[in-house]
Image (cartoon, rainbow over all chains, first blue to last red):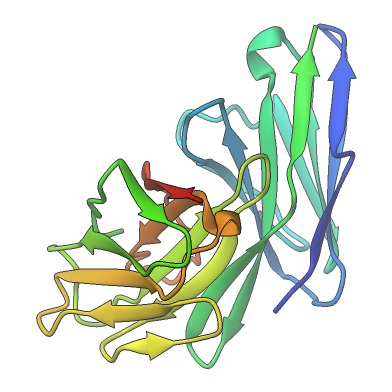
Length: 117
Length: 111
């Protein structure tokens, strides 16, 4: 398997500021990571695919200029929520894609709870 | 992704087996069936996946119908720590690795 960490686990920021969330693959080199968002009592919503060394691919309806993704190394992807607003308050979760023998699995981080005041 | 249908919620008693069903009638021949679960305030965790044959691991068993249009996740002895939302996902053959999460089944385990 793969161990995935996220930092910070919780963050509170003021409206209009930017927040950076880190996702690290601790024991596996990941060319592909994913970012999800989850509102209370709802399911996970895929935001974007983070590709090492290239631009992220965003899902329909996700603003790429608001949610900046950088995947500069095989073990680190970052999500920056720019000019955060209260409606961006959510649980942000990253995952690492593992491909082996034609099969795929995702290993998830513990999540980051963002509260925008 | 093939559409999946799961009951919204299920209840179980501790130390009894739990059978969580999933319908995926539009599955194609090469699509794997994946199960993940999410404990409260945590990221999801992989449970099991399979293609055609039934699968077992230390967490659970996966029983796949012969026509592959449905599957059942089996927890052999539910514990209180198994209370979670269980997601059945059929990613499809696009090979992007993406997982699209539905609403899943919320499992309550009663002591």
